[in-house]
Length: 392
Ligand code: GLA
Image 1 (tube, protein in one colour):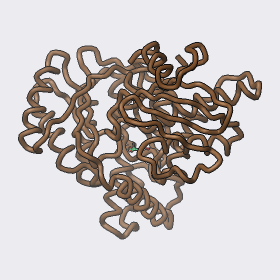
Image 2 (cartoon, helix red, strand yellow):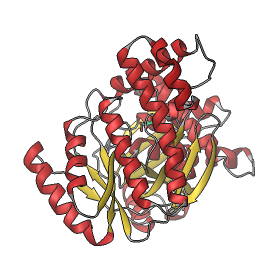
Image 3 (cartoon, helix red, strand yellow):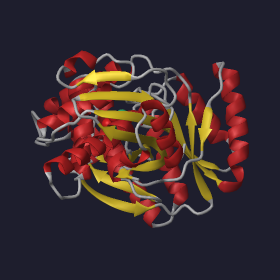
Image 4 (tube, helix red, strand yellow):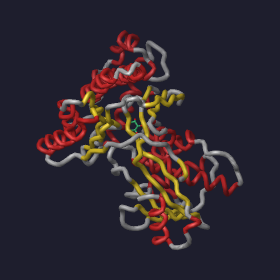
């Protein structure tokens, strides 16, 4: 739906005039490499997509958020005077969490009528939730600043942090900062090389002429993903505290590989050694990926993507039959030079680098073989890399 269509639908739904409707947007992300490293103070390499969330909204005179999604029935109403009541909403809880966190940061939240249009698959591993969080944070913060007469640009890194806190504190998922950061700070045709220990970053133009980034969705319903995610986080924290009885590092993701090899046995638990090993070597792979892309060595980059998936499968154990099948079938296609899961895992999507002329064949072969093995079909997206959150 384009901006005008969304405004028309908004007015059909809520009435009033078109002139008072504002429109904000924020994208989803695909992470090219650096998985489960963000909450370990390591490196990630995500990019914003052109698919995401667009919100049309109009300010109300109370503290009620009235929210509707174009693809869901019914309007959800949340009174911000009693925000705790909405944690278990099927949809709309991320927005309430964002409002709560903005208030903690001194913003004054006005009630709004809101219409959301999502072009990302809900819960499909492309950060549909981060897109909602960042777009909502930007919209509500912009309105707060205007109301208070504050005339300064919104700090998009602050909006990313608000989104992450909403998820950590209100929703109860201890996610890192990668998704919200990519959604807030992405730039068309660029990938973000982000150092999660201090949020320093560099926008790197993606020069892969002759290739496309193909996203394949397992279409698996992701159950238990949140609890498993939190479990991995705890395993990493335990591993680090054991390592720190003999060395001294603030994060697992900053430990050099040789130092890790020297001391890993002090962790004393085979599973936690594997988790930590993934994190340490995955951060190293991100650095090597940047170097490969700088040298226009796309084949090397593809190999690193493959190793990343293998490590997520064997050491971090967050893949599963659906993601592994997509990746295995992708790698068999001529013209696919690298394939890995992207995001939290346990379902969701893979990302593959595929030669332009092989994309159609890729979709056909992977689609057919996956469907035969898993019993239902995957979906494919060949998305461009887009801009981060903004008013449009
Ligand atoms: C999810 C989280 C991110 C990150 C990835 C794994 O997408 O929201 O913070 O941890 O998983 O890399």
